Image 1 (cartoon, one colour):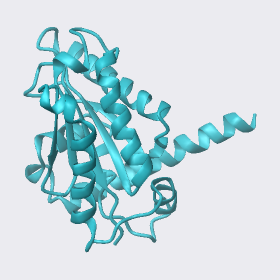
Image 2 (cartoon, rainbow, N blue to C red):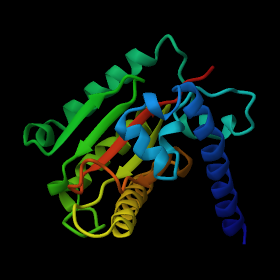
Image 3 (cartoon, one colour):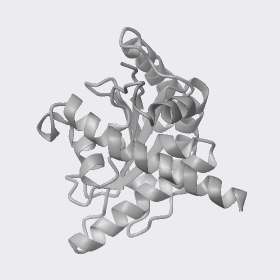
Length: 218
């Protein structure tokens, strides 16, 4: 009974964080018009995961849970340096995949890191089962987040070019959730990871995107 109550409590915390920080993220980024396609995908997909990394207010009742799960938050003066170091960590660990053209690591305008896995290595056509070749990349991401903390993750799944819009939505959501589930199994806290599909993506190739956002304290 205690386990069930704890599970429900964790879900309530996660839902509360999503509701509150999605709104904060949209406001702090000037609305959808100024966001990257990746960020739009996360928010329009329904999970709002891309907004969790927004500047947080310690007066917010959910801030403590989020900061605690992330092992702390960053201040504005060190965000850029911290995320640049995490980019170097990822590039070093993912060098084989990057050199093979299977993955890429980019830093976005808001200091978030975008890790992209190609459709050919993330998922097989029509499938929401994570390819074995993608698992080392996810393990690297989990290791960086677990080791250094102070970040959140937004997973964005992309569909194949076939099927109806409804089928693409289902598949992209399933793919995002499959990645989230795997990250949780690698030790990342549930409140730090959100997942959403982007059925109207311009990339209809089954790729997967993982956005690592800095958790910044106001």
